[in-house]
Length: 72
Picture 1: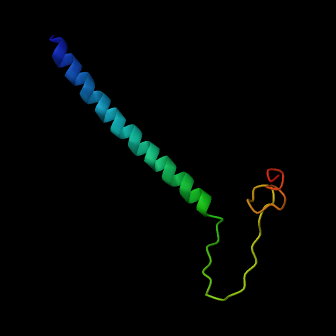
Picture 2: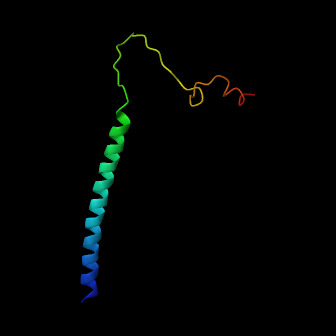
């Protein structure tokens, strides 16, 4: 057989495999995303409505005194 024909056949098979892999990866990402959104509660608020926000002090950029060390 001709090496060029074998190479083209192999390339075509690889392209088909890549399409299947991308399809499976997209499905897995979609499933993971939907699983994460199951326990989320999305709420709409009106202007001037009072709401309470909960922040984690370890991960917040609003920590008091975190920047005071850098200021001379």
